[in-house]
Image 1 (cartoon, one colour):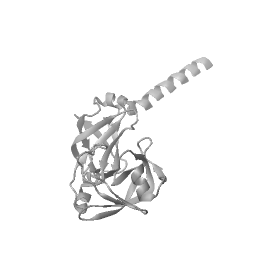
Image 2 (cartoon, helix red, strand yellow):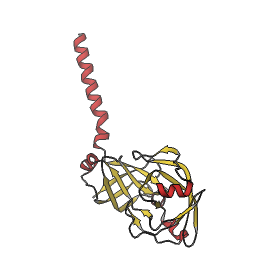
Image 3 (tube, rainbow, N blue to C red):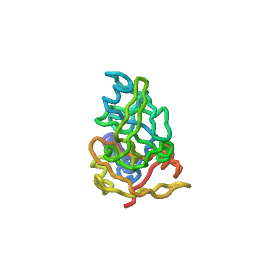
Length: 215
């Protein structure tokens, strides 16, 4: 009797484990990360803005591995205006990159160019002001193209590949579709769709929102 009960218990645990894992394994929903304006700094520009040898102060980790928000903020200036308290994200990069909203471009008086992170050729430059100095970048001001971070295993699950553009569907009272969403698949990513605050607000998305891919 004891042996039968033990076997039944093991079978029940196996079945329950399989059932609980099923929704996550077969889920086609992707969490949304909402991004506000921010800046990534090169070490040279960080030195110019905050002082030679300055080290960024981590405030909190972000969803993507190794990325974090810093306590430091800067002011960015364009031909027509300025925006204060733009959050610095770490770690430092090889080139300074300023990611703003479309509405910010009107305030700055700069062209709005939707680009993927790192694709900076031909983009406008801005003046960046810190507590110890300022720099004038030759390029690097972008409006981030909406995109989905995922691993190669995730890409296989969703039937997509790195560099592909897809459409996404948003449910809810203000839901709808977004096209031209880039897939960024690599081993250093965590599954998340990145939209900026303007895009998220347009469809009433909060921090717990999820989307689905429509190909």
